[in-house]
Every structure is written in C-alpha cells, then in structure tokens.
Amino acid sequence: MQYEVKGTTMPVVECVLAAGETLQCQSGAMKYMDADVDMKTGVQGGLGGFVKRKMMGEKGFLNFYTASRNGSRVALGHTYPGKIVPIEVGSVDYICQRRAFLGGEATVDLDIAIQKRLGAGFFGGEGFIMQRLTGSGTAFLEIDGEVIEMTLMGGESIKVETGALAFMEATVNLDVQMVKGVSNFLFGGEGLFLTTLTGPGKVWLQTMSIQSLAGEIYPYLPIKKSS
Image 1 (tube, rainbow, N blue to C red):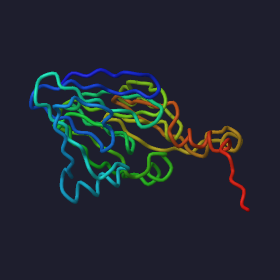
Image 2: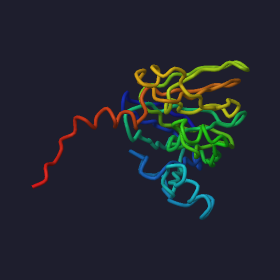
Image 3: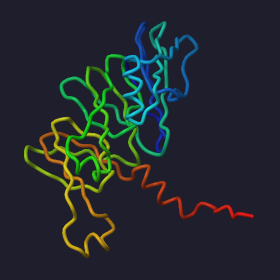
Image 4: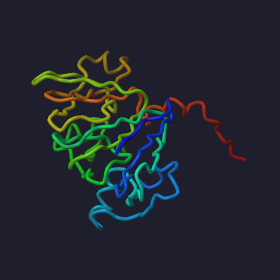
C-alpha cells in the first residue's frame, strides 16, 4: 500500500491499494474512494472485539475496503483539527490515546491497553483504557493539534501536561507525579499532576488535546436564555 497525507489542519490520507489489498478503518472515516473498491462493514473479533473498541473510545464496527485492481484509491479523513501520523507496526507495539486509531492495513491489530497504576489511570489524562497496536503493517493515527516526536534513552524522563501524550512505543513507561509547591499547582496553570514518560523508546506529543480545545472554545459559545 502506498499513501500520501494531504491537507493541513483537517487532513486526509489517500491510500493507493494493490488488487486484493484491504484497508480497515473506523466507521465514518472514509472521505472518498474509487468506484471499483468493495466496502464491507463488520465486527472484528466478535462481541468481545466490539466491546473492546467501545471501551477504547471507538465505534464498535470497522469498515473494510478491498481493491479490485491495482491503483484503487481510498481516502480517510481527520475528524477534528490535527494531524494524521503514519506508523509502521511490527518490530514494536504502540500504546495510543483513546480514539487515536484512524485506519490501517488489515494485518494491523487493535487491542485494549489497561493502565496498571492507579495514579496514571486517574490523573494521567489518558484514563485507564488506552489502545495497543500490534501485528504488522502501516497504521494511521489521529493527533490533536500539532505533533512533536521525541526519542528517550534508557532511564531518560520527560514531564508533560496531562493529555499531551498522543502515543508512544510500548517500551516507554508512563507514570504520574504531583506538581511540587503550593504556588505551582495553585497558580501555575498545569493542575495538580504531570505525566512522566521514561525511556527507552519514542513518544509523540500533541500540542492541544480535543478536550483542551473544547475548554478554550466553551466560554465563547452563546448561552440560550430560558424564557
């Protein structure tokens, strides 16, 4: 499969498939496709797979697009302002925020990842339920805002605001630490907790989560007055 990400703040990824090749994606993600592409909607993994995807913040059903000839195109679109990041799954698993998975080759498996530490689950901004990508092949992830990629060496740590983690290699450790100093957490604007990421491995950070964007917009929404 060949692909090209097109656009800026609301991009699409246009995938060019070989004959017989299948692209899977979340339902509603397809923006356009060639007329000779066959579409099927299904529940991968049965009822258990359906429940897992709902827990991960995704829709229960997946769409599968299969090309009948070489060069057939299928384009998947971003659902909110941000970036589409292609990754190669295979030598390492990836842990992603809820609803990050947009689509990918049919050989990529989407599973559930559970935070084992109570602090990370309650205060890390990602919740207890995250996504794990395994298998092999190309996958496409939705990132809020701009994306920053970093490589952490073994034992190297970085602290980020809660909700800033988009996805990471499974070798990276995630923990949560309380902000030190009364004035810091009262007036610093970062809240009580920061997410700590410790290498080895790569991490991808997002500049503004959709939750933060909604919080910034909310004060400017018109308020309907009751009669």
